[in-house]
Length: 114
View 1 (tube, helix red, strand yellow):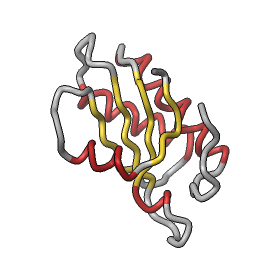
View 2 (cartoon, one colour):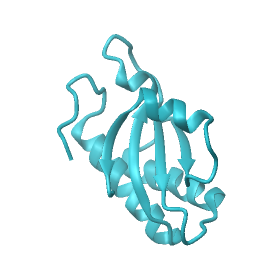
View 3 (tube, helix red, strand yellow):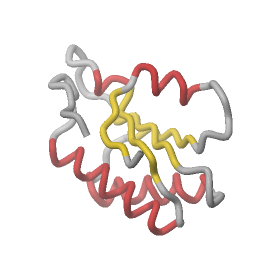
View 4 (tube, rainbow, N blue to C red):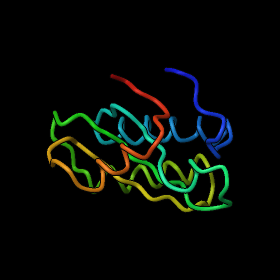
């Protein structure tokens, strides 16, 4: 992975916690994550506070219960980072366009398994 831009407003502990949470949630739901992208206010150094907006790209096969994965990911994030607000977008690549494309175009890749 390339180094992250300096303007990302996440601590190293938060970044590591996000990755551990994604790995835990995917392992528990038999999903495989491909990329984790941060978007929204945490990519803007001029802003303060804000929730953590994440786009998690998952492999389309095997089929995954995305509702269960999202709930498990939310719980794993709380276990790792405490009570923070998260906005989660899951994308298995089955729907073209939409909000996931916007998040991808404006976000910053945190990790890739591709």
